[in-house]
Image 1 (cartoon, rainbow, N blue to C red):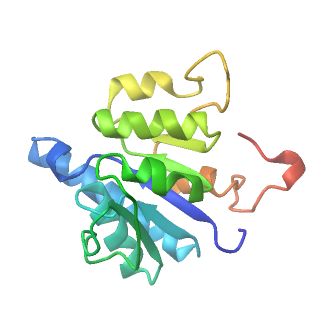
Image 2 (cartoon, one colour):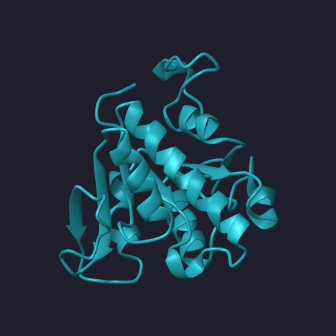
Length: 186
């Protein structure tokens, strides 16, 4: 893996988490596992920095000794307690879109509400590698292996597990080896 890769994890904040307790636990456990594995692989975990998926991804990364970056908006100290580096912007809603997305090498999406969808669209427009976690939402699942529009910036990838998502984010083959630049897939 390249040194200092930065992998974004996007998904519902605390107010957009599923109401069903079992589904909510699954979403948060997935976020925590993603953060933990990314950190254990030496990459930096990038999130919006506040609650829900962002907090649990950061928590997982910290438990594995990783570095976390959060982009919570304009107020210093607004990030969750697991964020190491806080990047402030002059807006509150959509701060990650403007202050964090450019810093990510790839972004893993746990399907959520309109905020997550907006982040997916902007990541696509920026040409970022976008990986959607499968099985969380039928509409998101229907986008996998497709493009958002006729511009065909990047094909949206899908992953059935956190391990698969991270392998795709880090450009690894089936055996965990980084693919050469000439065989890199998007």
